[in-house]
Image 1 (cartoon, rainbow, N blue to C red):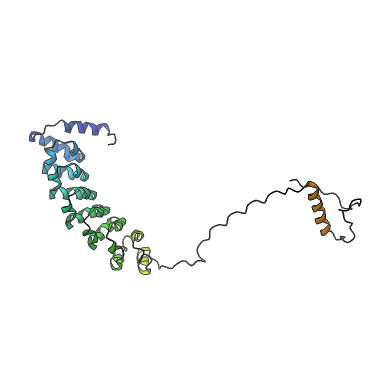
Image 2: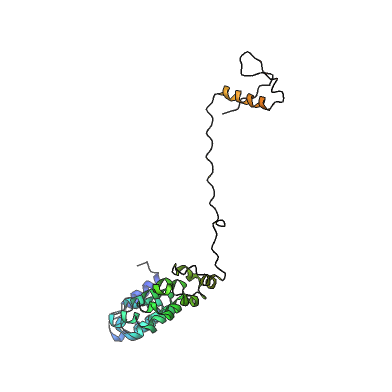
Length: 253
């Protein structure tokens, strides 16, 4: 457990010092009403008291985990817990996770609590709809049949277009569904319109390993080929023949 701040530690020490006796009920109840999370450290007698547990759940629904089994089976306690925090449904017994009224209350508080509902209720269109209005991601917790139910999706996507990411692939690109979710017609992108990936840069050319004399002769040949009096110019490559052209600078390697 993470380190508690000093005021929280004082509350834990204070509530832990009370006797497991109804004579301390008023003092424990005054603490629990303000700090519901402290029910975890209360004496066992008070974790089995409906009045104390309901008061705790009204300010800390996830405290349902620390109550006695009898209190987790208590309808009033469970309803108080899911009203404050819908995710407390995970700690409720199976019979309550199959109760439509309790699951509806939980998903209206936290849409993703649909994950902990009974499989039959994850098929219920109204329950899933309530969950999606709270959190569009709740569609991923719904039964697979609803993810491809076009009639249901036309209604559900109108207010939560983000849920389109969790629609079954068979209807995800349905033009009408896309229009409902995104507010525009669906038009597939043609291959010509798709942005092409940038071409990789050409590798640098390797430096020539030819001799300095060969590079000089190549430069002279190029200059002769561009000269207007190419026909009258003598071949500079033959030994013993002077070249009328000015010597060019030797290119550096």
